[in-house]
Length: 466
Ligand SMILES: Cc1cc2nc3c(=O)[nH]c(=O)nc-3n(C[C@H](O)[C@H](O)[C@H](O)COP(=O)(O)OP(=O)(O)OC[C@H]3O[C@@H](n4cnc5c(N)ncnc54)[C@H](O)[C@@H]3O)c2cc1C
Ligand SMILES: NC(=O)c1ccc[n+]([C@@H]2O[C@H](COP(=O)([O-])OP(=O)(O)OC[C@H]3O[C@@H](n4cnc5c(N)ncnc54)[C@H](O)[C@@H]3O)[C@@H](O)[C@H]2O)c1
Image 1 (cartoon, helix red, strand yellow):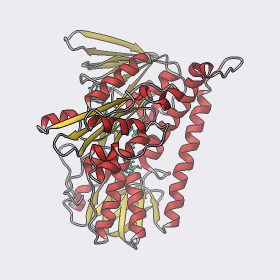
Image 2 (image 1 turned 180 degrees about the horizontal axis):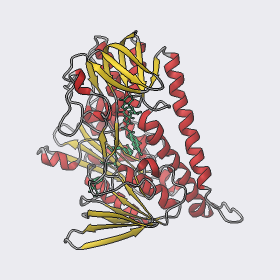
Image 3 (image 1 turned 90 degrees about the vertical axis):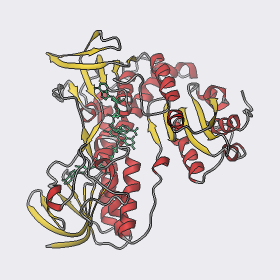
Image 4 (image 1 turned 30 degrees about the vertical axis):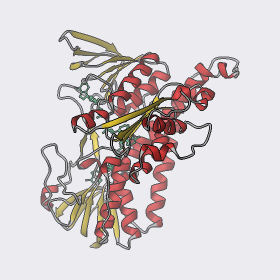
């Protein structure tokens, strides 16, 4: 029987990064993945394919809507070849997952394909083409998550679909009904909106992206409406039914009146659930929470001392970079180091256009905690860079401690906000004040000048370009 210092179950961003770090630190490492390709949700049916389709659909939208104003004329019709678009997405996925195979080989990590199932706390059965057993001194559970749904919805995966199927539709919906106005609903909704679908979003809460700062929700809502999305907030879906090629969704609005939506496809994007099916966690003495997550302490250690859990299957944000940080954290803990993760500084991004990005506390959280804070905002439209690209929507908002000026939260919506948020993370990691950012030179013309201007605004109303 093969024996390892550490075995990792699941090869998503949590698992494969943990494996690399364990191998770097000299541990004999195995990784177990039930699917034929490595990379988990993120690389196969999540972050990467969704961004590939967002990119392609963005090019198409630019071509049909914006090329002309740039003085670019294309004779004849511009058409979408959906099959080719989906094939390009798949080739991006294949290259990326192939890259993980390479990294496993480079780091001498043994890869097992098959479902990992605990026999006890130090033995794992792997049922793939043939069944084998391995021994592991330590195990990291990184089994991720699956789409969740509502109890009354029958997902037929043809017309009533989750994100997994929405990444490979065979036709552009005429009318896509999206249940859930979070990251998945809005990102994939925007893909099909750009390709020509009518898109209706039905959101239970009173705003889209309800966990982010309310200012971001408001601005995104405004921009999406301009893009002709139909947004229905404070709506409680009560039935979803397929009739032939039609999907009928019924919901109650804020006043309790029934509203009916008829479309040809329905995307159910109401969150994801931790995935532990087939793991036999209890045989290893690993307990789950009421919500089905693996229970862990602050060291990400489960109720079994030699077993750790990371990523979507434990508490916290369901994000690839959070899973990665946790993978490194556990590997370094096993090596006797004292790593640290500041969960307050894990940024959140929604890859709509304009992009939405944030780190730290929202205004709502600061109010709730009774923290005295000040704000500085700057609109993207006041930047020369934004005018050059005609990306005028959005703003940067900095929240800083009223007494000390320390930055407590940064919230932005605009072109390339996903990349810009890294500046705020660095600043907050070093506990910078708004004045610190306001005194740093930002290249001109860039979108990042809005961060400097917002910092100036937070430091005594000193913004220069408004
Ligand atoms: C459409 C979509 C878009 C997304 N976009 C983003 C984004 O832009 N940015 C971002 O940060 N996050 C994004 N996410 C979320 C991100 O994909 C997850 O947070 C991330 O994949 C979690 O990583 P993980 O390693 O915990 O688990 P996963 O990536 O889910 O990987 C778990 C792996 O474990 C395997 N597994 C499970 N059980 C077993 C078992 N018993 N034996 C063997 N293998 C097993 C699974 O097959 C899977 O491959 C997106 C998700 C979706 C669905
Ligand atoms: N850009 C990114 O980082 C990215 C992209 C996609 C997914 N993800 C992650 O994947 C996970 C799943 O994404 P998601 O968009 O499905 O979840 P989410 O939690 O981001 O959004 C789900 C939305 O559905 C709403 N909702 C819940 N129940 C509802 C109901 N009965 N009727 C109507 N609306 C309802 C919620 O209020 C919420 O706005 C999230 O944790 C997210 O962080 C991240």
